[in-house]
Amino acid sequence: MNDMQSLTAGRDDTSGMDVLPNGAAAAAILSAGIGCCALGILAVVGDGSAVVARWLTFYMPTGPLSGVTTTAIIVWLVSWLILARRWRSKTVAIVKVNAVAFALMGVALLLTFPPFADLLLGK
Amino acid sequence: MEVSVRALASELHGMFIGGFFLMAVFGVIVELLRSKYARQPSELTTTGQSLKGLYLFATAALGWAAVLLGAYVVYPWYRAIPPAGVASLAGYPQRLLLSRPGTEDWHRIGMEWKEHIGWFAPIAITMVAYVMAKHRLVMKKYPEIRTALLVFALAALVSGGIAGFFGAMIDNHAPVKGGATIHLVTEGK
Image 1 (tube, chains in turn cyan, brown):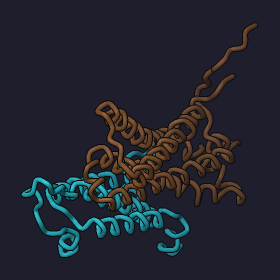
Image 2 (spheres, rainbow over the protein chains, first blue to last red):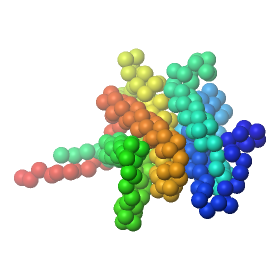
Image 3 (spheres, one colour):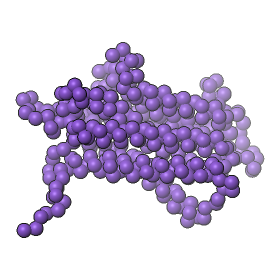
């Protein structure tokens, strides 16, 4: 909760006509990072556990990839919806939001790289 | 001249839809850079805005079409398990790659990376397209937002490029083929 508050400037900017809140755009940026990171985490977890891989097999011919990607897309869209509703009329600290989103994307890229995932899983 | 249904779907996924997607993302990056360094930001007419919106929508749609066609049509053919005692693995690309030490990393690294990283591209570019189309004024006021869009568009290009590169290389070593044959040109007698 504190982390979330530190990303917002903590003010409602709908009062001034000349003020343009950036919350909706920031919500889209951060949720894209969250969605990609969720995909990376799910890919590693699915690769490391046969039970999880079975749960993530939503469509048998495609295998666990179907559940990994579908779940990540749901996480992305739900986080986007929640953040957009919370930040709609706010101006947030966009530099911090960007930093978190870039970090999440970086982690996501690393997690999908098989040698790194194997290292994490001790393979 | 003929082609199998599976080979055609694979080419459609990678070379046609995937290829156009990468070109379209490059166009988005050029537009973001142009607007970032424009001395006097140009204002598009209503028709121009509509066309720009259409371009952004088409870019995102190409990304989703590429990953969905890849994951739900081509990938099941790629990972098909051969029946016991099959003489040739030619129709089973994943097993064919894993059967030889010289090619198994095309699956273990190439396909396993490609099948996940490719999905970052449509997620990232959908966000970029949405913000570019719906929050133009916010982008002007907060240049950091344009920077974020540029980074995510570059991430989409890189992740799509990695997926495309490995797709092409894997197809070189173990192409997806089989199914019904389509005769593109019938030779006249």
